[in-house]
Amino acid sequence: MFTRDMTFTDVERLDRIAARAVETFVMDEDAFRAFYDRTARSVWSYLARITGDRSLADDLLQESYYRFLRAERAFDSESHRRNYLFRIATNLAHDRHRRGRHSISVPVPAENEPGALMDGSDLAGDTERRADLARAMATLKPREREMLWLAYAQGSSHEEIAESLGVRKASIKILLFRARRRLAAALGGPSAFTRSRA
Amino acid sequence: MTLIECPRESDVLDALASQRWPHRTNQELVDHVASCDVCRDVLAVAEAMREDHDATWREASVPSSGQVWWRAEMRARHEAIRAASRPITVAYVASALAAFVLIAAAVWLAWPAIHEYVSAMAPLQAPALTSPLTLPLLVALGAFLIVAPVALYLVLSDE
Image 1 (cartoon, rainbow over the protein chains, first blue to last red):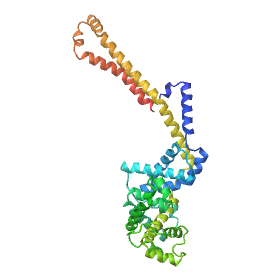
Image 2: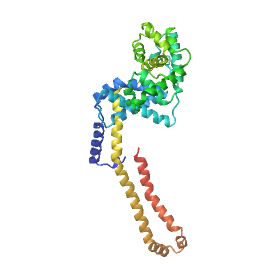
Image 3: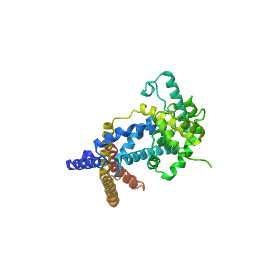
Image 4: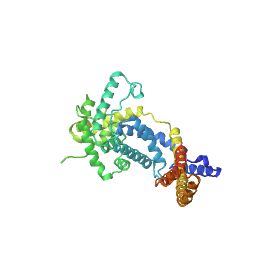
């Protein structure tokens, strides 16, 4: 704003301010790019599943990394950094949920997507099972979806889940048990056990 | 009492993660899962979620790290400049308001002299100036002439 009336000194001053803004990022470009390459797909998958909306996951992915870069805090470890990123992503998804975009649709693979590179029967079965899961997930509370995804899709420990969701570690065990029981019941039909053994 | 966890959960998850479940798992674990509610739920949920996770992972089409870094850099710069420019905006608005108040006060104070001068110059039009609405209308017109360009400037300068 008002750049038309700015003097050269003003422009220089604002340029310095802008450069300083980037210097406050929690990591430099090389470190960020390596961290992003290690985590982006996990974060996107998490966002896509807990929101049920791929385009929203795209938006929230960018926003999550931006907020992470502006975090103004130190991280002890890769795990701490990663959990903090998931916490940002979770909070952003909650904000969107509160603002009314909370449809949990079924993100099934389209035929031309890499996930669809399998034979016809596998594809049909895979798509059906994923649709079942999405429907079952939609019956859960957002917190339950997040917890289950972190625990069973990503293999996070209770401590990591607590840190990512901002929940006390002592509560994770019981919350996870309830969520798991609800999802197993919602999945219904022949259990994974019988399906696997068939 | 309902059990909320089972010591064999990690064995079930390990078997799933290493793709040993169900055909390359020892029979004792299979029998245990068949009889344990907790492990059966763990298996049902973990199997479905891992399958979905793997498929979602393959489908994920995320922007490149360079692109995300560049966007973040641009946004941080833009936000910093906006924040730094805010005091200038406040100064402009304050100046416009001060100018308006000064002009309104000057018109108010000079009004008897203006009225006298205009009456002397144009005696036929004088009744219009004696109307009680004339002064507020003139002040509003003056304010509009000052505020409108400033407002227009503020709006257009955002672009």
